[in-house]
Image (cartoon, each protein chain N blue to C red):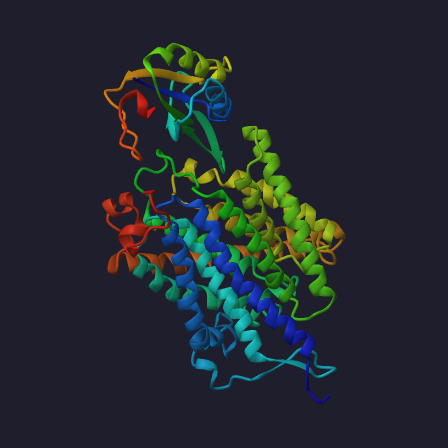
Length: 112
Length: 416
C-alpha cells in the first residue's frame, strides 16, 4: 500500500477531489497547509508598510491506495491540479506498512 | 421668560451621549483588529479601562475642571462643583429668549463620553507592550491634567474660546473637538510612543493587522457614534445638528476616496484597512468643522484629510517612532487638517469665502497652543510614570503575548 500526498493550490481542491472520485477513490483526507516553493511568497501592504509573506496557503490531500493504482492515481491528481503556473505544488508517494479500519478492525488492502 | 424643559433637545442629547459612548467599544474593535492576535484583548482592555477610570473621575472633578469656576482661563476649579455638588447648576439654559433648558446632568453624561474616548484614542500608539496598571493611572492623570484643561479652554469659556483673548481677531471654531480631542490625543500618542519606545522587532518583523473585518466593524461603529459626537455638539435638535450630520457623512466619504486614491497610486491596490482608516481620518477632520462648512466643502476637507493621513502613516517608519496603530498619522494629522482648514473653508468667515485671514490665523493659534500644551503635559506625566511605575512589560512577556502574560487570557484558541 502507498500513501499519495499532494500539496496543491487551494483553488484546485474541488477539481482534484472530483477527479479522484471519478477514478474510484472512496476516501481521502484534506488539511490546510502553508509553505513555499520556487514561487516564494507575496507582498502585502498595510497602511503603507510592506510585508513579505513567504509562506503561501496550500491544501494538502492525502490518499491511501493499493500498489497497482499508484501510477494511475498520481497521474489523475497531477492532471487535475495542474494550471501550468509556478506554485502548482508537489505530489509524492510513500510506502505504508499497514492500514487498519477503526470500525471493523480489518487490516491491509481490505481496510482501504 | 419662564424656564421650560426642552424635551426634544434633552432627548436628542441623551441619544447622542449614548452614541458617543458606543464609540469607545467601537474603537476597541478598530484598534483590536489592527494588533497582532496575541495582543487584541489588551488593546480592548485599554479602551475599556479608559471608560472605567474616566467615567468615574468625570463626575468627581472632570466636570468641575471643565465647566467650573475658571482659574485664569486655563482650567476650572476642581472643588467648585466637585462630585456635581457645590455650585453645580442643575438647569442649563439653551435659549435665553424662550427660556428653553435641558437638565445639566444630561450634559455631564454627554461630555463624559468625550473625555472617555479621547483617552482611549491614545492607547493605539502603545499597543502590545504597556503595563496595564500604568495605563490606568495614566488615563486618570492625563484626563485630569490635559483633557479637562483643554476642554475648559475651548468649551468652558476659557483661553481658546469665544470669551478668550484671540476672539478679538476672529472667534475660534472647534465645533466638536479638533483641538480638545484629536490634536490633544494625537500629540499624547506621539509623546508616549517616544517615551515608551519601540516594540521588540519593530519595524523589522511582521506587525500586520490580524483581523481586518473587526477593523471595518469598528470603523463602522465609530462612524455611527460620530453622529452623536458631531450632531450632538449642536446642542439642539435643529438645522445645525442636521448640517453636522450631513457634513460628517460627506467628509467621511471624501476621506475614504482620498485615502484609497493615494494607495492605488502608491501601491497599486485599494485596501480595506485604507478604507477603514479613511473613515476615521474624515471623521476626525470634520469634527471641529461640522457646523462651519457646507456639505460640499466638507467633501473637500475630508478628501484632503484622507490624502494627508494616507501619507502621514508612513512617517513613523521614516522617523523611527513606534506609533503602533497610527494615532499620530490619523488623529494628529487629520485633526490639524480640520482645525486649520476651517480658516480657509468656513462658510461665513473662511479666507476662500471672503472672510479674510483672521479665521485662519486664529485656527493656527489654537492648534499650536493645543500641540504645545498637550505635548508638555503628556511628557511630564509620561516621564514621572516611567520613573515610578514603569511603562514596559518584560521583553519575554511581550514576545509571548501581552494577552496571556498580562491578563491570563487568549482571544483565540489554537493561535499564539
